[in-house]
Length: 93
Image (cartoon, rainbow, N blue to C red):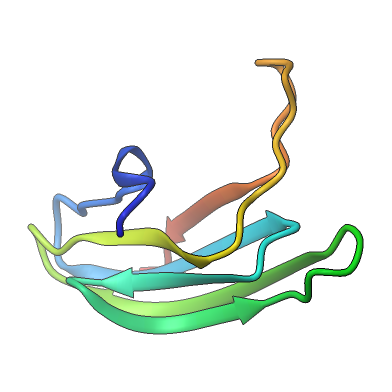
């Protein structure tokens, strides 16, 4: 299930992009490109876990890149000024 459709990225131009995810305490999260898993990251259920994963993708206008929580849950802050999970990227060319 795509739990974070609000974190989806759809480029307006064809180009190469660097994309990064950082998560706090989940069991399995994946970065998907048009529905296909590109990279994933795992953590175990004991205690608090942190991790990150990156990918370099050639994207076309209209492509969709998003995060999917495949198992477990994420911990997030109750404060709107502080978050623990991020999805970021930049155009390389």
